[in-house]
Image 1: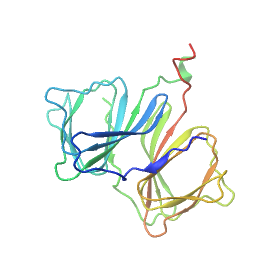
Image 2: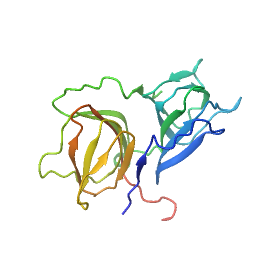
Image 3: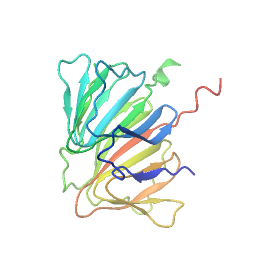
Image 4: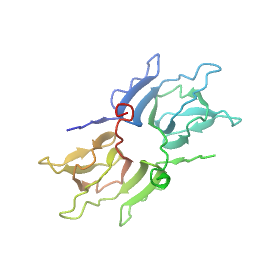
Length: 118
Length: 118
């Protein structure tokens, strides 16, 4: 029987050189991921351009998330969540330099409505 | 343009009579929900029996979650997450009596693999 359990706050390293990505759940069309950022940002000129949607929730630390069609980054603090629809280009301008930024990211493939197309 | 944002820790009432359920995101096949429990438990004899799967994460407080095929409730504390597959009957035996228990619940319809059936 499938039984996926753990604690999201465990084993958060504060001085990693790279961002750390951990799959908490991966099934068809859905992936729940923990991301730990320790000051990293997206490389200059880089944009995430995803075919899937992503719902993010910041559980500690903070980050500046820039959406391509907005003039300035949104500051996400502990508890803030945001939906990034598929195809909406975005980048991480900065993450907290003083403590780890813990993200919960729910990636999902938008499904067409099932019932109204029959 | 869809833009669903907020803070999951805001407006948590500590003395509500009933559990509080808030949809943070609802799209076809996926619902992300905040639940605030303040000491409630499932009624005696009641079992959740869901056709969809549910991934839960406790963000504050604590709870005892009983799965039907297990002898004792699992104690979920801050940061603990658990997948409850579709059809696995379960109930909430208790929630924290001293502080609100804040759950993030990701409900999703299991999808058959798309590529291997073709």
